[in-house]
Image (tube, rainbow over all chains, first blue to last red; front, side, top):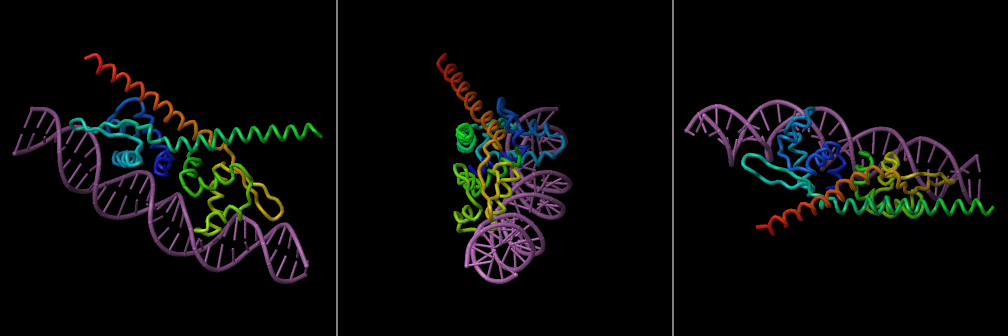
Length: 105
Length: 105
DNA sequence: TCGATGTGTAAGTTGATCCTTACACAGTTG
DNA sequence: CAACTGTGTAAGGATCAACTTACACATCGA
C-alpha cells in the first residue's frame, strides 16, 4: 500500500494511469504524451507503477501494452475512504454538537 | 493534492493521522506513540502534515493540539475514487463482455 | 525570577527519487 | 543476414526526504 500511494503521489504517474485506464497502450505511445521528458524517464515511471501493482503489462510482438490495474489501489482507496468519508462524518457531527451547545445558551 | 498524497504515502504519517482523527492530541503525546524515533522526527512529520493541509493546530497554553483535517484529502480521495471505483466497474464490464463472447462460441 | 516542561528549528548525514545520455537486445522487415 | 523499431537497463548527477543531535524559546509553577 505504501508503494501504491507513493507511486500515485507523482503527477506524471497519475497522468499515465489515466492514459491506460480505458485502453491498453504501448510504451512508446504513452511516452509520446510527455514531450517534455525523455522516453526512458517514462519507461522508469512505468516500472514504478508496475512494481506497485498498478498496471499490468502484456507483450505483443515488438511492443509492450500497458493497462491499469485498479485492484492495486484497493488498500489505498480504503484508507482514504476511512480518513476522508468517516472523517467528514465526524466533523459534521462535531459541528452539529457545537451548534446545539451555542443554541442552548 | 500532490502534497497530500505524498504526505499520506508515509506510514508514520498515516499512523499520526489515525491518532488525531478522533481526538485532539498534543505533540508530545503523539511523539510518545513512536518510541522508535526521536521527538523532533515526529515534529517534522507533523509539519509535513500541516503544510499539506491534513491537520490543524491550536495552541493551548504550553502545548500544541493537533487534529485531523479530512477536507485536506478531498482531491486525493476523488482521484482514488475515480481510478479505483470506476476502474473496477470497467474491469467488471470487460469481464462480462469476455464471458459473453466465450458463451457465444 | 528561575528551573522545569513542551515544542519547534538548524545543521548535517544518508539513502531514495527523478531525470538525462549511452547502450543493449529482441522482434520485424527487406 | 542486416538495418530498423520499440523498449528496457546502466550509470551518473542533482535534488529531495527522513532521521539524528544540539539548541532556541515560550510558558508554567514555585
